Image (cartoon, rainbow, N blue to C red; front, side):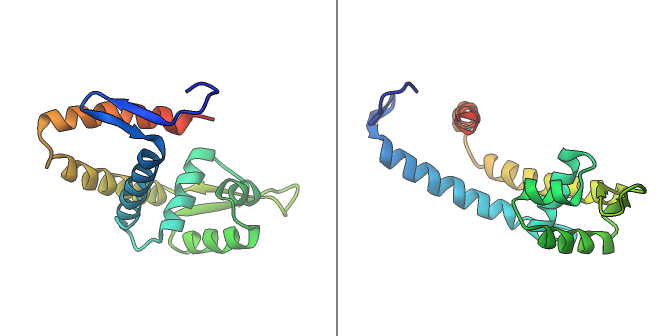
Length: 155
């Protein structure tokens, strides 16, 4: 997409679709699917807790401050989330010996397992829905995924 405004999208199967309409339909569909996926939880966790586990995995061994910034929450909120995950044995906390104000968080083996289980359940949820499509439609969805990945990477 260049610097000029684009008002229509050409599709081989139909007439040009106004970009605003396409954007609205895509937004609603992505939000609905995202909401359905967020409801697919295992392990007596909230979506926020799964998000924190995922962020800890991605960041490696973050401080509470780094984790709060990454999750875009206030440090006291992150401290509460981490405390709940600690109580469930899903994360470990390590206090810096030289500066006790610095606390790092890491996933435990149990935390890694529950995170993987949640991912597997969500993937199975989508796979079950994909199986309901004809092979040709799944092929078209494969092409669409490539476009969605590009869309997500645009700055």
